[in-house]
Amino acid sequence: MQNKLVCGKYKLSLDKTLIMGILNVTPDSFSDGNLFFNFDKAVEHAKQMAIDGAQIIDIGGESTRPGSLPVTEKEEIRRVKPVVEALANNIKIPISIDTYKPKVAEECLKSGASIVNDITGLRNKHMLSVVKKYQVPVVAMHMKGMPKTMQKNPRYNDVVNDIKKFLKEKIRMAGNEGIKNIIIDPGIGFGKTTEQNLQIIKRLNEFKELQCPILIGVSRKSFIGNITQLPANHRLEGTIAAVAISIMNGANIVRVHDVKECANAVKIADAIKHS
Image 1 (cartoon, rainbow, N blue to C red):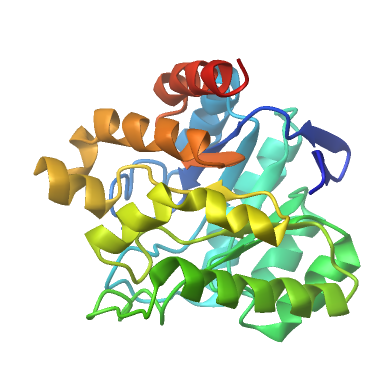
Image 2: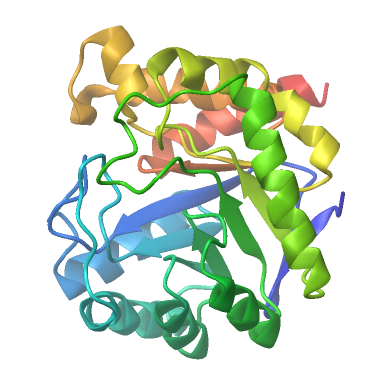
């Protein structure tokens, strides 16, 4: 596995865990919908996350909460492109665009983004062409179905082995196009039950055999709420616990809402892991 991510002009070492700060430019995301839908608030929040310790900012313009409906390409571009452009000139860390639409990805890459985060695992073949054209890292995530239906009785033979098989095929597809800079994400909460999510985190080290950096997104997820019986905005402690355990089990990148609080937990987990 490579020991660094090359994201345009940025080179990120994978010797320690990277923090990806979440910026939802949406009116309806599950835990922070409408908080940063305003352009100025979005830009300021991203700047603050960079100060607080984020090494990547991940910008999304479409909610992917369970049951959510897609938005048009035009609307998604309207939401995210101005924010990407503003941040590309104001922060000195890579910007990731959280989209599964190739046109949205390309518009944002042209505007200064340097990572693509595709929750559908490159389901749209045109995304491979965009990633190849711009020579950027791409996150291939596992999701069962689409957000509208993904939580309707998700079933697996063996959740970890099934996801590994899916991701292995995506790595092969991308490799056939000459794309090597792939990050894998098992997709916590995307078509998985609470028990399946726990198994993924517990067995995360099994994904190492795919020889790609592992991204994990546990922040404020429903499985934490199901265990703690707390709403999304009261799941910080559960998030920190899941982040720390994920790092110990092999995560290279953690995607979080609460960057400042999680940054200290990441430092401790890294210190223990590398001691």
